[in-house]
Amino acid sequence: MKKLIAYCGLDCEKCDARIATINNDDNLRKETSRKWCEMNHTDQITPETINCMGCRTEGIKFAYCASMCPIRKCAAAKGFETCGDCSELDKCSKVAMVISNNEEARKNLEK
Image (cartoon, rainbow, N blue to C red; front, side, top):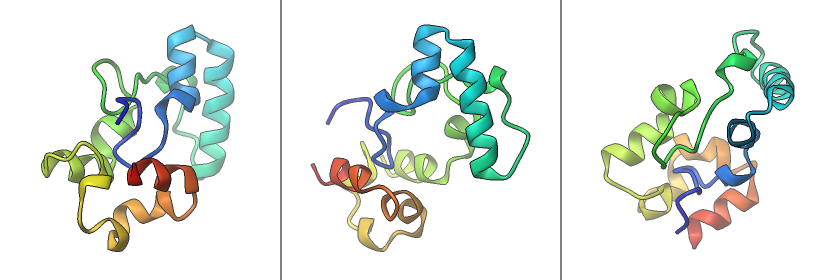
């Protein structure tokens, strides 16, 4: 599995935070901050926090991905490459919030 597939199956290569980080794109950081604040009903995601190289790679990570994501914490603690390695994938409430809304993420985990 490619390293830029997150524990939850999302493709970090397509993530605006990673793209903004690689390209040092402050306009994309601002737009991503605005979108993520709307999606998460908060004003705490600032453009300055939009920096990430991917949750399974070396380098900087978005604060949520680095230390708060329950999916990342669980899979890493179990020593899994991704949630696709877990026998409880289909009944897991943690990863369900991602794969129930994102068919591509589910497919990435089934590879």
